[in-house]
Length: 402
Image (cartoon, rainbow, N blue to C red; front, side):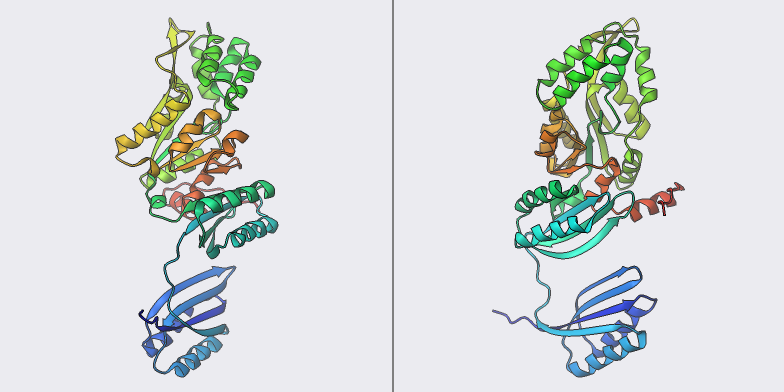
């Protein structure tokens, strides 16, 4: 077996300033070493720079040189000798932790579960500090599926959201986002808003809640609720659309991911008369929903064609992905109700967004804060990157509260 080469790990810490990295690498250049690995972070203007290099012919001279440079910079340095460079780590995963706020006790629980699983935290970075705190951990040494189960319990106990994803190329290739509409993309349920015009809002809301919990068949419940809308003027649809409120962060997520080449679809158990306008307004590429039958300007209480139900949502995701020429694993699905479960399962990443308990328990991950753009943190996109892209486009982001 080939012997791994000796190496030196040089760790420099102290107050950050321009020229620190240049000064250290100037010394390394003089020694003629090879750089094996490198990492640098700055936290509150405190720098930690780690450089792994081969051992030079005159190791003592290099140690003296970097120590002198550290003294000149007013920093501390540690040089440790070892065997081998950084090898490729197996069973790697991205763990995203989201809290509002994120308490130290929650991070302690997360770190403890990771350690108990036999895994190691290789790197940590902050993705956002406002309006939620999002932290991403690069983890190695354990099966991501097993780690997901272990951390799901920690998430429930500590009141934070935790997503575990394999660290592979798929994460960088996701190019289709498929969203439910009612209570996901928008606040509230359109059918209940229409029911208010028919004077049966409470009755419809009760059936909707049972359907979202998975207690009754979705198609049966939908046809029963639509029948109650018989006689409502079609103009009510326009009034309802004008009263719709998107969930916070919806527009930010769509415009940011569109810049990166993502495609979007909305798949709804609601009505095409609403979803088609939403798609146009937001720049969403695909939409599929049920069509209310309208005759002589009045809702008849019937649905035209097949119902977009639980199976229909998953089928739509697969069809949109096929049209784009991408595998199902390159999709992200977002939903909140039981009729979204097949769609969430079919996607490469299924996200339960402020969902019912039955959905949270079966989805790949859950987000329980009201900001839809937190989904981007699961894709490794930081708040700083989002705001920088908006600034280049002339979009002003409100400053966080002090």
